[in-house]
Length: 327
Image (cartoon, helix red, strand yellow):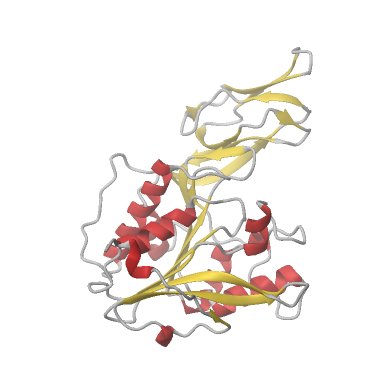
């Protein structure tokens, strides 16, 4: 029997309330957790995976695809559940491989009413459809967590390094960030409207993992994400694995900024992810449809390239690159 066989269920139940007791100790169970109903009155449910070990504390929450086209986190969670030994696990892992079901089904970033779900957390109990979805997601799932790792990727038309957003002034979230062995860590206190911010308001230490690019599975990024989560489990004393040390130390940035165009055209960004640039270095050019040079852009300050645009079609105000300000 493969490890995957042990979490296969012939009939996965739909539930409206999460109850840890539905999963026996030292076992893995999967559920469909109803969040809202669609226009036909049918349930819109999120998949929830529960690995319950010998003890019920701590509870580590893993979420992915809060944006529907950010997919790398899905196999990260799946593979972790295939690898975990619940007979030795101390505590509970709750995985939500797809948080934003309506957007995922449409292969889009935003919820089906055009709203960015990660800008309206924790939602509203009596709000519109996206606000109610966010509210119920937080209250039916996230409030059960003791810690949260929220997995994201770049958005459409852009690519990311493997980087972490975390409040580096908070000792627990700082440690969680360093354990991921990411290329870059950006100090970023929880902002209003994010899932990370909603968790922070519930006193749940949380970090955001930016694991590569949208609309695809990237094996190297997926492996990196799994390694960092195993480190987290070891740090929380949920497993007895050794913490894997990074080949290179993460570059820590005190903040970051996006650089935008001020005109439209065909954009080329020749710098690479994790490149260090100096103030005045050439970072992008825009040409018109005939190939004539319209504008060249230069780094406004020293920094490191966290992410960048790869879509040539660029309107005025389009993104060029995400620049980290190194601490």
